[in-house]
Image (cartoon, rainbow, N blue to C red):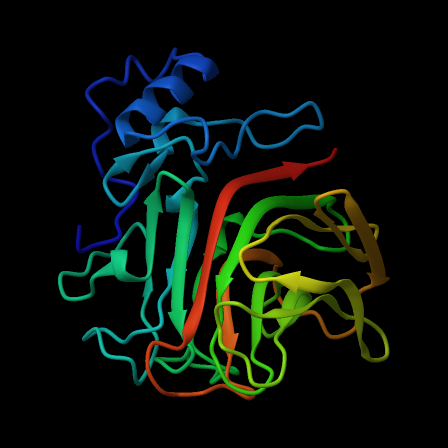
Length: 299
């Protein structure tokens, strides 16, 4: 499939009346349509804490009906330009756009393991000329919120599979952002002389707090390929992160710098390999699989 158009894609024929379908039936039909099993994304389910309800009408991803996040509520940022080249201005796709040149599935796709993201270390950048190319989903403008009055969080079960090679590569693997900058980030710091595949590095939470940004170590020995669960959110003007790997759990929170926040806040998921210490050669880049995503709002 050479386009990203979530809203207008037809659902699987196996889907029953979407206006009356029960949650369990919707999940079952969607999983069968994907040809997968219980390990497919199962996000946006109704939770006891008041999270967004599952809308069976809007569970589409690259032509496949899935029980994952509502992709037509997100914009997809790609590491290529409108001609599919790894240069120039990065291409952003949403439910109102199609693209016949770019092979979206080379960078983002739904697999039996979940959502797959890939971004080379060097590629097309966003107009802000940030630190590198990326393949990320970001919440669209119609679904943004106030980080200082709302209590929202995102739960990600994910695996960072590879990074760029070189000296101390860095990859962002989850963010809360406003119109101009990140407020909270989950960030991987690779070792010196990284191979990009068998490395062990450090995962940190990065907070844009007052007066300066702060970093908190979540895992000082993360080996590429290990499963992690990350909860990232905002509550009472504070950004917070909870990180779990195996039996180890770490949490951190900081007050967000409220003086400089501009516009609505939103989540970003995927991979953003920053160019610091990266080797521009070969297939050097970041790969991430997110097996489950859950968005929650506490009222």
